[in-house]
Image (cartoon, rainbow, N blue to C red):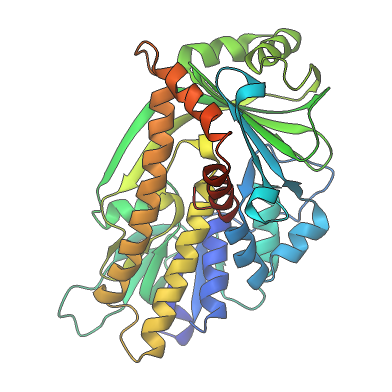
Length: 398
């Protein structure tokens, strides 16, 4: 097998988390190959707006800055949000986070998925990339094997040997399944409706989220003054909303937001996707480790999915580089277990929070939703707690 057919680390999956993982591991001094089933993304087109957006936290922005990805994103378009208003009962009584309370310039930045992916791919440079390469099977090393390399068998007949395979191949990860890693998962009886629109009275630089009985409704500010919405609604309600004409949908949206942002003056195309929670029982096997959605998928109400994936990458690089620099086997069970322990704790905390909020505000128990709404209003009046939550929101720790 030629030198080109082996590497320290093979990263499978060319989405934002996978490409960032490949960049970060390469920058840390590992020999890396990126394996992507599809092709490279097209150059970012500023004339188009991707309906899939991320609320990028400061921790994620710092990682992208270190990798040289953030300057290209900032040069294209980003939308900082300095405030976030959250309420259940009445907008004027809800919780208002302000970046000033956290000592940050912004709570986060709204960035399109396509822009992050295109900017990250541009930074790959001479890092070996295999596109159009479907992974048919993975053979992982067994304890006691003389050869500690795993083998990826690709659809074009090629094989790639790697000390470690990083599975960044999504929530339906074939690599996770082939490795025999079980998941805890359930589907919410909800769909998330996404669209981009213009609002008459929305303050610039502020994100909004209202908790409704049928699911949360979020408004994320875009760089051109519009907002991207994520309206999570019970399946039946989502079907009703999707069936409405634009005028009726705009009216329903204004009513759901209690007219706090004014009327909808322009509305783009709507689409929807089902929601689910997923968490892998294990984050690694011998020779394989999970990152991003392959390890965890959460309800989008907190906007933390991408940030959790980027935090996985940062922790994995730190753990592997520290083991290598200390002269230890960086692909050992000890090293991978250290990564798993750190990220499981953080990810489970966020999964529990988002699932608890979903269930609490959607609860049919009499009065529970009002109690939670009152809690938001109370926190808004307690400056130290509010400042702490603002700092955690800005840092991307939930």
